[in-house]
Length: 206
Image 1 (cartoon, rainbow, N blue to C red):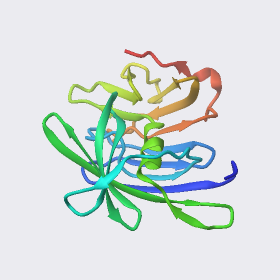
Image 2: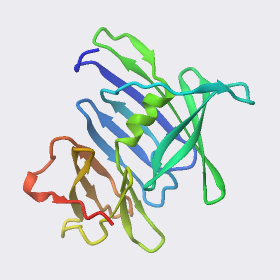
Image 3: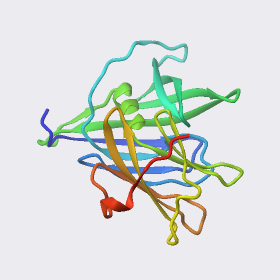
Image 4: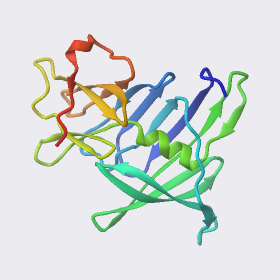
């Protein structure tokens, strides 16, 4: 695998209106609606993914199932992953006494155009690398990034834009969040800042 090889993934959420689009070279163009119930909802991803392995076992429902960890709303959460066929998976987890689900799948595409189905742990790893923006019932806007919970409610400028620098294990990325009139918070997350670097402030972690 070379750095030029691209991975394409597609996710569809069962209980969220969020949408994600991430491009090659770890560029992310993300559209998210407020009041989503999950950290990751729908995604079209082109990014280099570091593969891993997971423990698989036969599920009672007849599929192949794994237990993986996802960062959801600032908490590392154990999820049950069930293969649904044709490279798809269902991610199930418990939150506040309720079982929630989201579905996803994807393929890797090399320079020759050859496609290979991605493993569930590859999908989960890439999902963990991208932030989530959520507005709660009190109007507080949070950014969730791994174990970080960042209140950005008062960080929007007069144009309704918030720019912060995220960091995890020495890896930095630039997050730009826009407050839209319809109450949604589309955002982009990139290795290279979309705007002037000086406009981004260090994230105030709670």
